[in-house]
Length: 391
Image: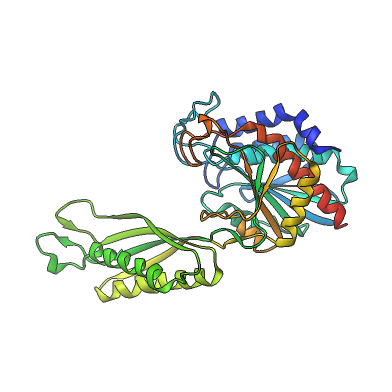
């Protein structure tokens, strides 16, 4: 089967899938509409599928090596201002990162793989994942066996990008970390509240939290290796409810991101030590809760170059490689890539005109649906070729 031609013939079906997910955007782990839609669509195609945690797992083919194709399908908790006629109407959820594209492309790839099932030299496993944005979904599906029964030998995922860039670019990294780790944390500083007129009777958690904040800044300035990329951000800092009351508690939330395993281990450990010891100096305590723990996304070099070769063989007009891509954002597909050889790539879904002006995670962002057949074709073709070459 020529997957590029077949994907073009199925374009309107893929667009319909995308627009269903887009209009019915859901966030987090619990995505009942998306899960039900995927299960219903796969079952109508005769594909064996079942819930896997809060996501969906399916298999096509039988025996042999197993390649996993993953698509996340969650949205973001924000309003949509794209102006699209199929925009999410709730005002509280929006597909501003393109995960609706991923799910739609994988559904069409599933159809094509099922049509070509007798020619497959092994098994394709499908992973429809929730909660990538909160870094919970991959962990949830791994815990529920997505990499087992049958065990996975390799994995592949694509992510669309927005912006003013030409359609057809595929961006990858076979030489280093493609995306940063993300260790989200919450630090709850416990003190002792008092009236603002009598501060000597308090243990002020706001004062402690300010000193913790400044001490954490010094970790990047003085302890992180300057040859590595390391970022620490405190994005949430709140305490108290009145101007004349010293509260009992102050809470900070932030993230640590790096492209280096050793730097990640150092900064996470020192964040915990710094918060606890600083609070102790001022008579309080610090309770640290890890909100996410995702490693850097490091793709398997050999597998990535192999997939790029298969994509070139498909010869889609306008397609162009962009090696060495790297981003300081994070992606929980890294939890898959940490366990099995994996390849991850960006596909340009931008516009060169005003439609491409808004970036991802912006309420006004728009993505180009012309990339949908390309993504579906790449998924099906790469899986088929990898199985044929590893039978």
